[in-house]
Amino acid sequence: AQKVTQAQTEISVVEKEDVTLDCVYETRDTTYYLFWYKQPPSGELVFLIRRNSFDEQNEISGRYSWNFQKSTSSFNFTITASQVVDSAVYFCALRPLIQGAQKLVFGQGTRLTINP
Amino acid sequence: DGGITQSPKYLFRKEGQNVTLSCEQNLNHDAMYWYRQDPGQGLRLIYYSQIVNDFQKGDIAEGYSVSREKKESFPLTVTSAQKNPTAFYLCASSIGRGGNRYEQYFGPGTRLTVT
Image (cartoon, rainbow over all chains, first blue to last red; front, side, top):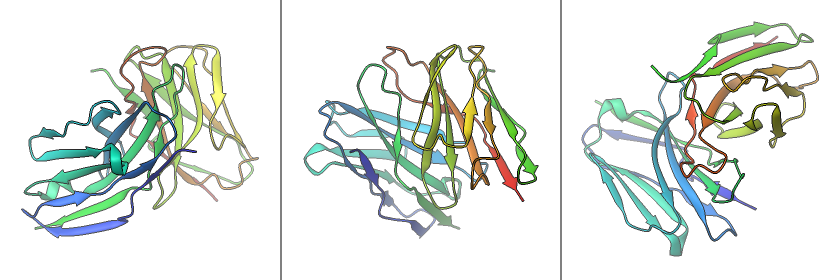
């Protein structure tokens, strides 16, 4: 069975603070993809990053960074110097790397509120 | 601009009525998906289609039906058999079918309220 757990239901920080969103996953597959999506109040999910299971390098994109640790089955997301526009619900998701497998397994999401 | 459109943004229906949610994409993607999102929960897969005239059930297909007659379109019908139809419905698409890029791109969603 495949499962994604985002234990933090809600996080609230003051603008300019750093914040880390946790994601822990379970899968028996040896190859898989992990994703992060952002859902602003408008409702549309915005793709942020994809990471395959063979690539454990951390990635940085501006104020966003991701820490993938296969040994602990975690794929955490950090926002540095948070801004009010970062307020949204963030979802972590898992997908097996199998031809034809089209299913994304989502965590329950973390609602992030950045206060001015 | 390329993207996914869903209409309408808000939809209200009386219990017992079937309702069809529209999803159109001009990204030339092969695969399309329907998800349901309930308050405070993640997304759950209803149906998906990897190619025209073919689709598969997801985790919560009961009470829903789909068609895929055109590559660009993947409408979802919420039937009266769906016991709790009130939810936020999201349509997505991806290159799929052997493509190496697996991210799914989402539409703006339709919020369905059934009373």
